[in-house]
Image (cartoon, rainbow, N blue to C red; front, top):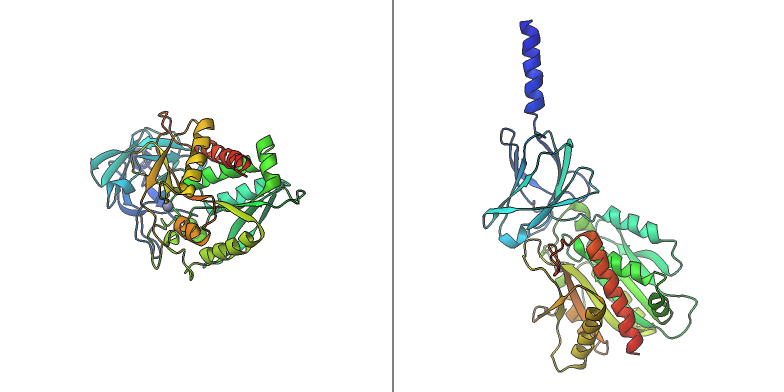
Length: 388
Ligand SMILES: [Zn+2]
């Protein structure tokens, strides 16, 4: 009997005080675990620096073995406030995500407290994940669209194919305008990919404006420039030897930038280059509730008028309110490079998606970023049809 009781006690204590386990070995995962406190049901971590990274702003891990009837406490340490997400996300199945607001204990220590939880496993990330595999899956889901051609731009330094998407109506043989869009030069900026999906979804849609724009325009899109760092779960920002968005010069370090600039050159010889957009996201810890566009032009230049016209068009059809940022870009940034090499282009702009809440106070989610992207796609169509 005593033996049975001992077993029972051991069994009960195993159930109540399981050992928390953490997995960071899957695609896109990242975390450096400092401490696991099974008694307090707490995981203490910080984002790991991978490869030649310098900025800790992406984490994504799986945990199990926690006490399900108590709050699970996840505490992040980081180097500065804006690197720590105001809202992190968690999921039991790695597909359906919930946002959770962190509480600052100090400027660089944040605690997220997950309510008692009926699932055995939790995934926890700095924001809605968007992995390389998700991009490949998205591309295969739209690949049958007759107005879309998907190819490989080139192979990354780690031999991953870098997808290139070209959208046009090939049955139309008139002289075409050219639009170039790049996204995810910074691997941690997952909102950029949801926004880019929205742009693509509009441009390949049955919307009459999309049908018209495909007859007169060819759109080149590289939706994930830094595939290697997305794949390995690195932040990408300010990495060594050079940040992707500081590599736009006449002799780029990265294959992706080299191939994009080469292809931009050859396509601009065939088509009339009109617009370049580079899609990014802010830091997950910024408390701004806006998305922003960058303006690199003097206010009295025709390019600025074009850029302004574009965003006025956008504001007339979209509930989202863009905010203008000036004086940030430098010579080897994508927008500045394209503006300097193609001075005749209508405008270039960098777009920064926000992570937290929209102007209407609603959480930014993949659905909202899709809507933002669709509105940007529609604005491209309206702008080009009005400004021939
Ligand atoms: Zn960026």
